[in-house]
Length: 492
Image (cartoon, rainbow, N blue to C red):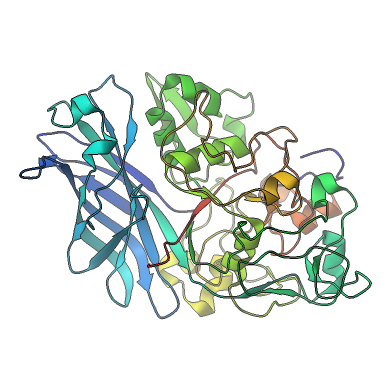
């Protein structure tokens, strides 16, 4: 992290993106970290000839309760043969077919579909889904071609429902960490700030406005505003990745975007990459991950946003980060995402083998509201929002961040492997528009804590601490990761 700080921002999770190459005569399967997506033989519908992709999907530790649910975001890539490039296929307007255990709802832009339990549930989940492709999204010469191949992919997500929430911290000491607060008439800390709608937010040292302390706009933000109505604030429902992007997911992504684009997006090659928890390597003509379920910790901002665009998702905002962590609950002073101000009961930590401890009391199957602290889970059961890798989010503290409108990726990329969304902040070198939240793991436990700042911020940072909330830098590093979100359609 930038040398302005004595202790640089310091920095293991579960989740999965599964790819299964479609063989037109035989089904194939792929497995990674609990989520399994099996893509069957391509089918053609009578009359229109629209391709249909049968998919068997299953994952562990699923839930649907009165508060929220988890889901799998499914999308499809197609190509015209083993040497042809992959491209995104949109789904037909009709909902996918599914069995009685699963209900699937395609996004309005038909980039993908969310599949979740059809009734109250807790435990393993599985079902059959038929994804019908929109022929217009396919190259014309492939719409009825026997050479057409498809790959179904899935990412575990968590639904964060509509509703108000609070940013900020009841502890006035949080002001020195640039936490948001409700301003008094003189610009002082007046308690947490309640966000009740997607309307524009006034940012000023004025009564009842949103405000925060900043000693350097480069790091904490420029304290300018307003935050426009178009900027996603978290009161509207959205889906967030249950875990950060994993190394296995990222290797799959690199293999599907073409060698030229992958040469810009690949973290492989740095002299310290393999010793700093990186396990992706080039084997023959493909990227492979020796530790596919380890968080992809060597990611730049552009790496993460390109992945989000390719998957039909988008970056999250720092207000959505707080909503996903805290939910509608009143803030606890210096609270972590698991709802307390203590780390003493946390068992899900990066272990000596560089992976998150996930056994015994840290087994995710034991997750309930009463065990959130042990598992490091948020109010909505989003995992590892603090303590795994730093979470990057679009900031309100920079003009480029405030210009973010929350557009979604369309599955297609620009040259040089860049995202196509003009409202997304772009650039890895002090470009601005995004920042860091949640803390991250750098060295093993016995090697860490080289300064007071490092101990305070890393590997776990309280929800509202924004010491680097507007620092748009840090190209790639041992503790830098990414997770994406998607706004829920109004009818979902």
